Image (cartoon, rainbow, N blue to C red; front, side, top):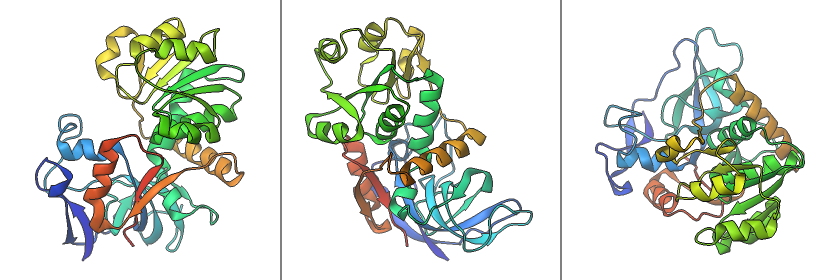
Length: 306
């Protein structure tokens, strides 16, 4: 038996419980991880509240989490990529808010010794999403990118990855996160009324592309600033699909492994950092999700099950 976070009804984080469950076993082609860190992402509380029940149906009681870092402690038949004792990170196929999780080796990469567990557990979801979104937008050296919710999970990666490509990055965020954005390589602006004028004050010639990780109604301003919808991409504004912008959803595949390896190389080279706002034990999972839902974070939230 082992501990895992579960919920039996779609509701607020207060319904979450840490319960004893049978430890999962690694079947053919899978590995089992002793989870050391699990990143907390907005998708997790959206699933809990039932907002994703049509797109991501699941049987209840169920668990949460997919970003994971841990130690391989069981290897299924046919697996050659990893061995027991290997430290890895990536995405799990069973909930990662648990002491043990199963994963496809094709969704994992080796964890460098220099990368702390709490950082390793946050990379897969937001890191891969930011990497793929910048590729879809074809961000190049010398271009100007506007990132909405630049201090958030995906935004933090997008700002640094774009800056590393040689782009000028302008990021929307609350005043309290402006200094952090500057330290990550972005020029911060406050979101809300007057955004177009504030952005043009920084970049009078306009901008080349927009990555929207906010979904707070910035799409019309984004299209105006970019001179059209062709290079405006949103991760969350599904209701704006008819405007001609790109709606991006990360899909599993080999591109994710390349993204993780690129991100890890930048971290090890000191060219990308992952701010951690707070870590929580499994027993404080409700508090973690409440903070995540409140928004305006200054770093990643991480569960440490071990």
